[in-house]
Image: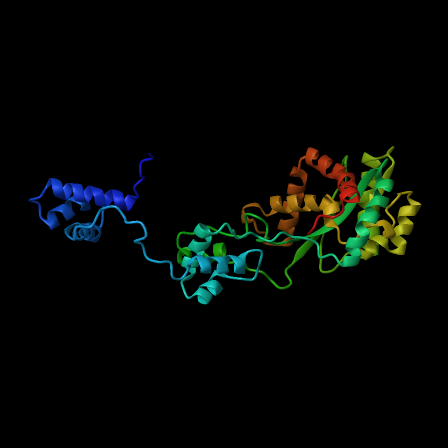
Length: 349
C-alpha cells in the first residue's frame, strides 16, 4: 500500500502536535516562540494549538475544504467554452462576468484548464482571388526557374528606432514606478524620419545596398537609375556573368512600369512576367527573411539612432556582418519555396 504524502501544512501540524505532547508543561506562548525561531507566523502556530485543544486530527479531512463557489465544475466548463479558440477577451472581463478577482481567474486558467495565451502570428491579408491564383502561378514560376538562377530585389524601410521586433517589445522591472521612462515607454512619431534600403540577392551573393531618406514610394526613374543601372547590372556582371538568370521583382508599380521593362529587355535581363508574379505572397520571397535578420541586428538591444546619418552607418555596418553562407541559403530557398506551394498549396493562414 502506497504511503500517504503529507502536504506542507499537514507536516507542520503534526510537528506542533508532537512537540506539544512532548512538552506538556510548556505554555502556549513558549511553544509559539519555539516555532517562531523557524520563521513560522505565530498566528499559524496558535491556530494549530487551538485545533489540538478542540481534539481535531492534524491531518486534513477529505472534503473539508471550502467549496469552489465561484469556479465550480460547471463554471470551469463555462470558462473553457468562453476562452478556448477565441480572442478579444481579457481576464478582467471574465472576472466581472464571474464576480471574482482577475488573479483568481488567472490561477483557475493555469491550474484547472489546459488553455494557454498565445501570440497571434503575422500572415498576409490575401483576397480569395489571390489565394486561388497563387498555386497556378507558382506552377508557371517553377517552369521559369527550373534551370536558371533567381535574382530577387526588394525595398524595406528603417526608422530611427524599432520596439516591435522580438526582444525589444518588453522590459523587466521589480518596481514599475522606479523604472526610467526611456525603458518603459515606446515613443513613436506619427510621421517619423526613415530610410529606404534596396538590395538584390541570389544564391551567389547580395548587391550593394541603395540607401536613401524616404517620404514616399520609389518611382520608376529612381528605380532604373539608382537600383537597376548602378547596382543590379554590376551585381549580375560580378556574380552571374556566364549564368542563365531570371530577375524576380515584386509587384510594385515602378518595377513593371513601361520604361523599367524596356530597360530590362535592352540589357537582356530575363524577368518574371507580371501575369505570373503571385501577389501578396511574401513567404515565397526569402529576401523578406533577409530584411528581418538585418533589422534584428540593426536594432539589437533596443539600439536607437539620433539621426538618419547614424542610422545609415549602422545599416551599412550590419549589412556587411551577415554571413555569406546565410545569404547563399536564402537565395537558394526561392525555388524551394515556390515549388512547395506548387505541390502542396498555401498553408492555412
